[in-house]
Length: 217
Image (cartoon, rainbow, N blue to C red; front, side, top):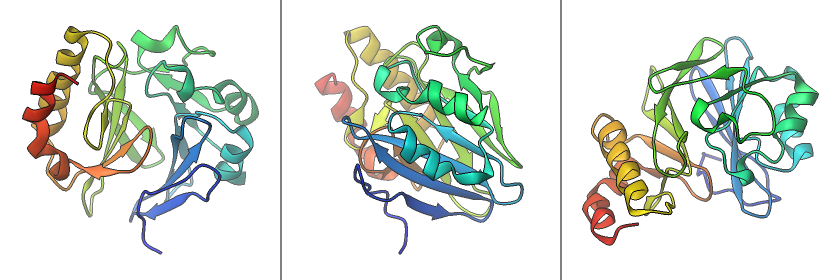
């Protein structure tokens, strides 16, 4: 079956096989968090985006090929409840933005800033700092050399709007960053993999940016 991005807690991972990278999406935990395993097809090296919950299911997803890194998109508890155990069991290095690092249960081995690059074997992810949901929220951009852009947005961008904020200035900051650092530079067919729920594309969301700003959330 082709990839749909429509996963359910307790259900199987949805797997997308790109020419250079395999993406597996798994829904875990009581808050329906998405965890993403990215594995380089050439080298077998893998990274996990958000060790959110359900250690056993994440380990099953990782399998016996190992794990090089765990990237945490932001500091909120529901996105790292399995982080310490996964790192302890796999020896993976930890990656996060320094503005959120102190809130995580493990030390961050590889702090990353806006514009930084995280290797996944011979592939790579570009870090996009999106300030507002938390101070150190990041999105991760993968440019498929034979296809579209793939964007892992954590809780900064969902179908229907940006992530939750707790003050008007945080909302403006997040929407400004999403407009300038995502929509202004990436094409409509960019595939968006959020931290919860179903996937979307930038083309599906772009017409609504003005509505989001007007409503204030």
